[in-house]
Length: 302
Image 1 (tube, rainbow, N blue to C red):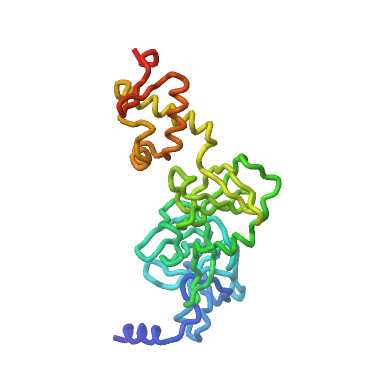
Image 2 (tube, helix red, strand yellow):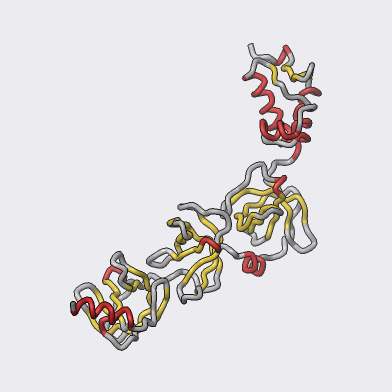
């Protein structure tokens, strides 16, 4: 009964600190497990354990220690000297270490992952992926992260100078909207890719190679995930030949086939299909007849 009363009194006492916070606390006593830190509630029952295994440097009674606070498996407030590697307001590429119905947890270098609320997500990050995120303090005073980093990356970016159309760059996706795909390159350029220039939709956070297609006056870039037309034509032509050879030298697709059917079957536009087919016809490797495309006799595999 007395134990229950003590628990009720503990719950009623105001707590200055809570989980997912970084605080500088004073070491007030030692124990076999480690040391206890003053929770500043006026009651020693609220002192916070800093376990020996969570200490990264020697400490003694009276020292002020910067710690990260979290809940242990028994939901007791516990401390660790492994604090976040980044400061509040900073943006970094962070690894997803857990996903729940409410959101996800990202690794910031602290003892525990930092919560990414569902509302702050861009796309649906999965465990093991790396995404752009910003560290902040939420309304409850806890550290949290958000993938809404457009303003921060814009301020961190620089104008694309010395870049030419056709150059290849690498960048990571930080947002995907109805307009298209936004990336932050390794050179700190902001690049935009129209959905039509993406044969497949990359995941938010994914690092991809892009081809510069346009230099904008505002210093940003337009880019594509597609290869140049000549290179794409050759690749598409090889795919058409492989399909023809697999199906006995014929296929029910021609330059009169609808764009939707070609997109569904080959994943390319009708213009790209016609370029590849026209190239093969000019080379004398295929011909069209009665709504079908046939492999020329001399090109059939024996």
